[in-house]
Image (cartoon, rainbow, N blue to C red):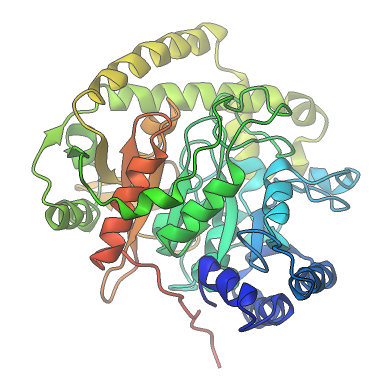
Length: 463
């Protein structure tokens, strides 16, 4: 499937129709879903109806919007009117259907995009692998025996396999960036509060972000431009006016100061993960190195705050229905419920200090490069992995490089680095709050240099 901006332009030019594009998307889903397990709900009838409405608007000389006829999917924690929001859980199956769409869904529809379904995730977004006890694992299109990463794994897999050109995920500690890296696509975690979370099932309120997946930088920018901006339904959603990023993609690197993160971000991973950063730095001519201070402590504090806020949200369900949780989720939430309040308060105090220290760093540089994950996608079911001569748990360590940055809500895009003969990796481009324009400019340059790319991956299935 073509990229979103290409699809929209072709539909508006009369070269194809929204109905034809959505039909092709649904055919791809039907063909590969049994192998990928990326969707929890497919809205075929409604999608075709909505596509017909877009075609009718165009026939009448109207402009349906910048994403006219573009199929999209959302992580199954976004409310879809008339559908139960599962959030990867069994418990939510008995909830009533959502009364209205989440803000991000509504904005995409208003831009002419066509919702085709909801995607699999780790239960309640608490995980890095999208191996779900209730609905099974999501399979990586690059190798169906490997994980997609999580918790937005279904959304990432759907985009990587070309089932849809764009999808929405959420990122608390890395849940957009990790699957983007492991599935070899682009994934944007905007500044905290930049895209409304209204109508999305929460995990940890002071960390949760909503953002897009795509196979091109232009598509990431287009979706971001449609979705960001103030929303009175989200108490923390930024009151800054929406500022389009698409025009920024053509400005190149002029005026941007780039650097590579060392210390915490230059250790703890497989050599190829660190080499991916070096490859991009070389292509960009970056020689400056900076230290993001106390990143390891930031990661530890992130664990404390996430576990505390997540367990508090689910405390009643843990008491009443403990056996209905995914076993891994339940254990982490129970552990979080035992964290002393003093630890949480201390972690929040450290957070304020850390935010100011990193803010000072962005007086010297505009964009920082760092690995997204410490290794490529492990096989489904693998519990441990060898890193620097030590055996460590697979799942929690997938967030070693993402958690310290989610901690203070920085805008970050993970860009895909394809590995010849191997699974893809990702590199994070990190900027100061509200500088999505800067990271998208750098990503666009890398894409133009063909150093990063996200081609459609046809899942290899048994005949």
